[in-house]
Amino acid sequence: MTKRIISTLVLWIVTIICFFYIGPDAAVWLLAVLALSSQYEFYSLLEKMGRRPFKKFGIFLGGIIIFAPYYANKLELSHAEGVQSGIIAVTIVACCLRIFRERQVAERIETLGSTLLGLIYVPFMLGFLVRMIELPQDPKQGLMLVVWLIVTAKFTDVGALLVGKAFGRHAMSPITSPKKTWEGAIGGCLVSIGLGFSLTFFAQEYFPPFFTPFWSTLLALPITVISIISDLVESMLKRMADQKDSGSSIPGIGGSFDLTDSLILTAPTGYLLFGFLT
Picture 1 (cartoon, helix red, strand yellow):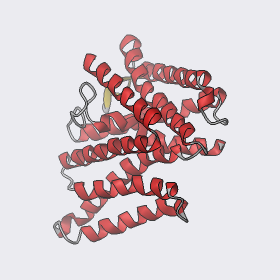
Picture 2: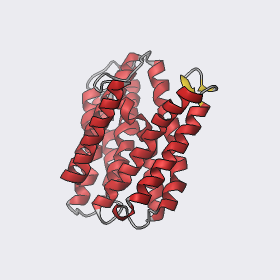
Picture 3: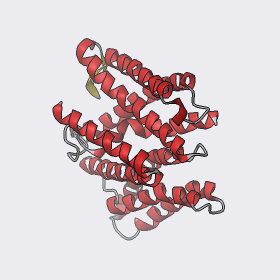
Picture 4: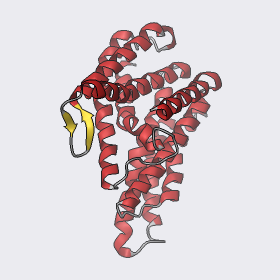
């Protein structure tokens, strides 16, 4: 527990420095590092299951998925808004061409599927955090939306852990994640909703005008629920790969994928919900 607390504090300090003292570019690079290292660990889990994705090639394409739309928009290139869908199409074409060079014929479609799964599930989904920065006219306000989403999603897990240890009695998913309880999940949701409200209430001037404490409270509920589902998906993957953690790069937490697991499904959800309010 001590290592987990120290790692959490260090990660939040790095996040605050990158987001609020260096600027949006540093925030994008930090998110990219977490996304690509999570993608690497995702591919490693697939390898434990007997799959053979193109790890290096997939991560290279993952970097393009994250960086290209951001810098295309920043450079004010024409049709920058359509870059995202175009990149997805190009990565699919690139993967299809790649499988003809290496891999046995019987493995090619499996390799194509596992490589594309890693691309879509990790960097594409987490890339919505980068796109979230550009939702308001002021990127600093966009960064606050990202911080709110991270706080709401991640503290669902923290709250569930603490409440579950104290009051947990009924297992939520005995096979997939036996330590998670319904009591912990409900407690985690309430903790995150409270933190989300507090963040917007006490720092309203730093958020976009449309994101009031009322909307923060209302949107926090679906975010917390989806973060639990997102976390359970990673638990399923680790169980199938017979792994306790996705990696060992972060003491007390595990790997990068263990850190970003609850953000993968909440990032596009949050982007969509914020988009309705703009």
